[in-house]
Image (cartoon, one colour):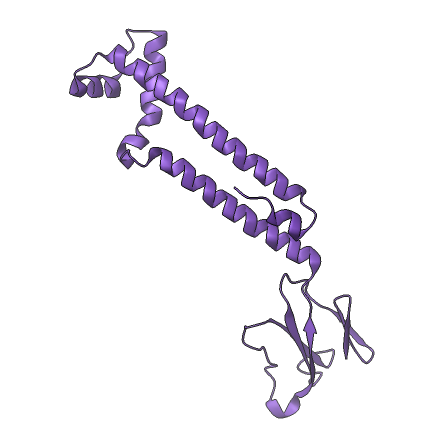
Length: 189
């Protein structure tokens, strides 16, 4: 019994093994052909996972051996890229969240409507703007003053958020372009 290039060979029988990102153990049993047409049951288990065994009668299964299946480099690279992108996305979310953390969720959910009404007022001062009118009255300022503030804040947020999002996208591109796990590991927020 041997493994060569993720191919398990037992006598004349060969079986392609999965390409995993972590080292695993391959265990092979000889079993009745009624249970498995090949006469073999092969289980691949990642280290630390419970071992898979054949479901035929225990006395009908003969353990042939266990071998270590090394992690596959391509699978390791894919996993490293996924892990790094998850970390980068989390960092991006944290920074974007920190910008708006002083605002209540309900107010944030009204921003799109506020901007829409502010832009409509900028184009036509006689446009109906019920949300901005109510906010302006509660604040004791004019609707046109509030519309100017909304447009200015929306522009400032767009600039900062755009820089953060652009950084995330550049890092994602660097992760995608990386050809080794080591190259992926240097891509940080």
